Image 1 (cartoon, one colour):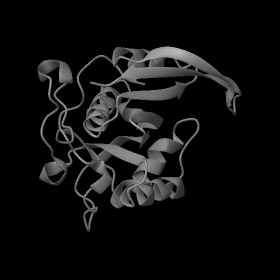
Image 2 (cartoon, helix red, strand yellow; image 1 turned 180 degrees about the horizontal axis):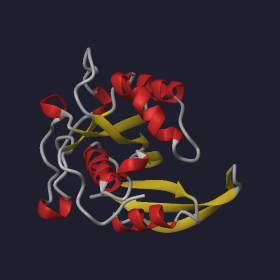
Image 3 (cartoon, helix red, strand yellow; image 1 turned 120 degrees about the vertical axis):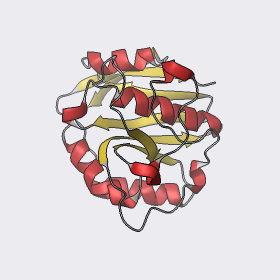
Length: 198
């Protein structure tokens, strides 16, 4: 899913917008348990209405339109761009009238409620996997969620998905349980992981 090298130059992490939805659905289609464009659109509507959904995109060559301050934390942050500290995603700005330049490299969808976040999906374009995109995207998203009051983040992952588990462990997630029969096609349990957020 993700390698140890730094992310591609020019990678910007920002809220997902309407103009990204078709590309996000195409990226998702390359992974198991894909999200459709309709599901992503429903999530974006929920987010705009002040609901629990939080959608983040990783864009290559996003230009000034999508740029935000660099992730705090110096070299360990991977040199990627992130939402500003304290970003209130309950009131994400309206999407641009036209898509900004750039290629959607990946996206992540979360729920945030009661001081807890949960990762619903993370997908990276096949050609950009193992290049640090997923790590950069998750690190920036978790920082933004923490700034909104999340004290921890949960996720489910297939026990057979060793690269994803390694990525999550590298960001501070640890296994806390199992959900029997959680996944379909193929059927598999889910490993539940949790990460405390600062």
